[in-house]
Amino acid sequence: MSAVEEISVSSARENLAGIIDAVGAEHRPVFLTRRGRRVAALVDADDLDNLLDLAEDMADIRAAAAAREEMRSTGQEPIPWESVKVDLGLA
Image 1 (cartoon, rainbow, N blue to C red):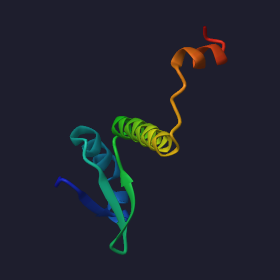
Image 2 (tube, one colour):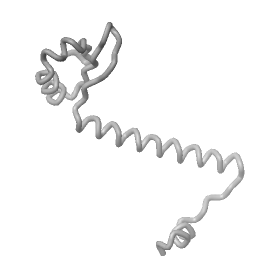
Image 3 (cartoon, helix red, strand yellow):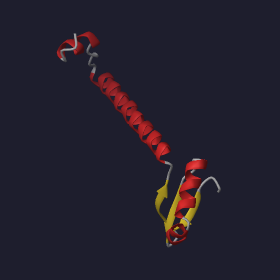
């Protein structure tokens, strides 16, 4: 299997179990194509879970960066963590 393999949907039907085994063993996605266009991908389930976790982390990082930029542009001061805990009933 190459770094990124593409297989037609009709070919994948003929060897789906083998493709799934290869995806799991090699941890490389296989793109399914229809009329030469990518329409889906087979990815190891654990790899997808890891990718989703990383995507969520990246979204949090970007949101934090945007919040810091907004604070810089508006001159706002951060709220001290101790105040936040009190407001949330955690202290």
